[in-house]
Length: 334
Image (cartoon, rainbow, N blue to C red):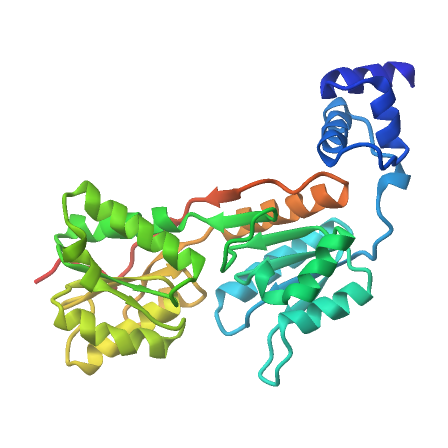
């Protein structure tokens, strides 16, 4: 045991007495020092003492905004499989038409002494100040996947939205498009803001001023109706292609384009984001940015388990690159 203490203390850069305090659950050790000792235990191949694990129920809440967007069920299915393999029980929590919100679910989860929560496409801030305070005070392990807002101090797993936007723009420019519109989600939606940053950076590198590209940006609710509603303005502004922040927006943009008597992709090319189920079967099949759902889900569960084992949340987002899947909704301009 003494040899183990020495090895762990050396790796963590602390005294053996500090290691003993951590192992005994002493409150005199800072969270940073405690995390360093736990990391040293992991690296040296020593298990955490069972007494160090908080007595929590083996339940993990999966909080999603809705199940209408196919990418959310895809994440839920993959996360649930990963959690089951780790001996945890997933609990699906989604907003309902009759008013059940994230705050309601968090209250119920806390009553069950929940083992952790993974928010997908939602936000830690959505749960409300009272519930958020309760989660912090109880030290509930939290992970956010594609969070809608800034959430400092919470582990975040995110698709690289800026990269996805630039990838789609590069594809369209290579086809010969020069005026390319951008349809985003609501103002303030963080992933949309990141896509806008990528869009702005892309044009800046090419010497195109803000006064040229800014009129080609539109915001809408994440739905087919939202995409269909804003695309006529962009087409009137002279775009020959549109990059959309979701597949639903892209399908709406295609519908709105056709209502004007135009064809996709002959008159207007359209790209989406997510590569939702059945996008290969739409008319035309949708060119879209595919999120690496399995990799992101695996990282989310691993980050949650790390917190369950007593480690501090990882600071800053973990980025995952998307893959542009080229299909029939994009072509060279006429």
